[in-house]
Image 1 (cartoon, rainbow, N blue to C red):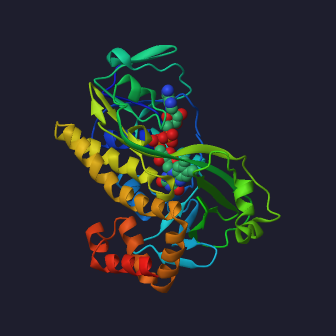
Image 2 (tube, protein in one colour):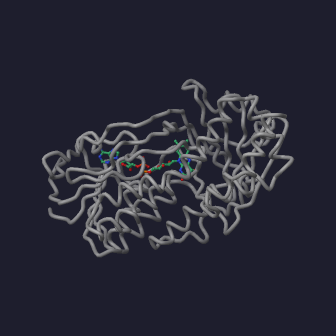
Length: 366
Ligand SMILES: Cc1cc2nc3c(=O)[nH]c(=O)nc-3n(C[C@H](O)[C@H](O)[C@H](O)COP(=O)(O)OP(=O)(O)OC[C@H]3O[C@@H](n4cnc5c(N)ncnc54)[C@H](O)[C@@H]3O)c2cc1C
């Protein structure tokens, strides 16, 4: 089999990339060892910037899942919330999103091979149990533990920090249209309203042994909300990695999505990165220079990395978090500005200004 580009991994990143490349007139084949709809531990929130990037790929989600108005933080003594500055976000089950992406890929003519075992991309071709594919370019979109990354010798890591994520669904009507993030000592639980009768509850922590049931006991307010409602899915886990790679292309390979590095799950920006990288890859291929992809890849991740650094600082330092929460509750406009920057509506430079600096100094003095 021959194709212009073979994408290994048909998760959100691989399918988004297939859509972007097909739109640009290239013939694409996607292969994946799993069979749709593919599930994964995820908070299942799409911020407005994720929806905009998806829209550019021809995928619109007007009616599925639930609308998200903004973000709300809770800790033991304060609550602070902000609405998205422009447009809403959307929450939907991963399996639903995956089905929609597969349908759109089918519609535009992407060739997809599912349940393919023993994929090997060495020697410039993709071979697997039952066949092989010749492609001048191989895209590794095979997630955090990417085999393609190793085979392409692109595994050199600049920085890495790991936390542990778990998620479950509860069969209860959402009580809020916000993504609610409950901060506790060294972990966060966030709740996303994924359907009219279902919420997704995700835990992210530095402790590999902590599970949702135990963590919920430490947030009685949330445990009370969920009391008596059945869990509708088993607990599913995944690493939440902040990982930066030295290179994301080379030797006939390109890496994309979590295979190419990631930001901590608390940002809710993982899928947005993959969607934006897909668009950037097409631009670089059109320009005939993959160095453009490397540069764009770094630029796309810069904003979520900075926001993640801020949030992880609050995770590490409880005293600072308490002071910051108190200060944000007193000055909710600062929280609104930070959220606007987080979803790319305001340039970071505008938010990380003297105003934030003086706010930060105020927090430290408090
Ligand atoms: C707890 C948690 C919460 C999160 N919450 C959010 C959120 O709210 N919003 C958000 O945008 N992001 C969130 N993320 C991040 C998001 O889940 C990831 O960024 C996203 O799944 C990356 O997509 P991907 O396609 O790169 O990788 P994956 O989703 O992991 O897909 C990889 C695909 O490759 C296939 N594959 C793997 N190995 C092989 C192989 N050897 N051969 C063939 N196929 C292979 C797999 O079957 C899979 O289909 C969260 C992450 C965690 C851990």
